[in-house]
Length: 150
Image (tube, rainbow, N blue to C red; front, side, top):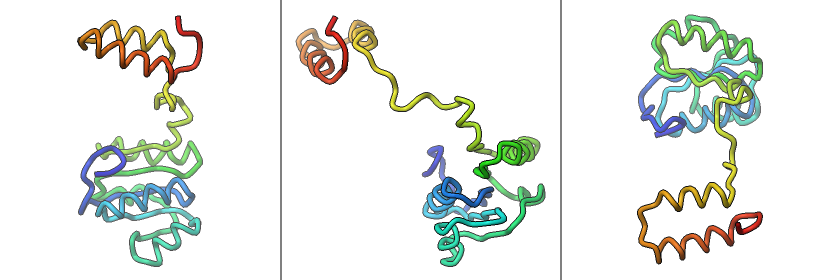
């Protein structure tokens, strides 16, 4: 299990990009048993090490045919237009695709999540815990959260 919580062992995966983000994804996918092809004109040191150890395969330039037979694509080029083009190719083929440039568009919730006493009180009031257990848990939450107590 990796990245999206899906089993990639034995599956063909394309990672487009040669920087640290692509390296982290390629390493994780290879560790989980995927057959990883990295496509990028240049590779960061970590990707060079992965290529040299035969953990991943490498090619210098991406073409649409690179997606033939691929089950998952991960784009991390650092260039939104390139990531979007590869994502479009994947969508046309109905291939799972993670576009790293989407993160800057706010597709993921902020981390760490914002917490406040108000949201904790709302959650506590909707709870089905016994009152004594709820009071103990509430005091632990209250001591951990910033801001006024009421």
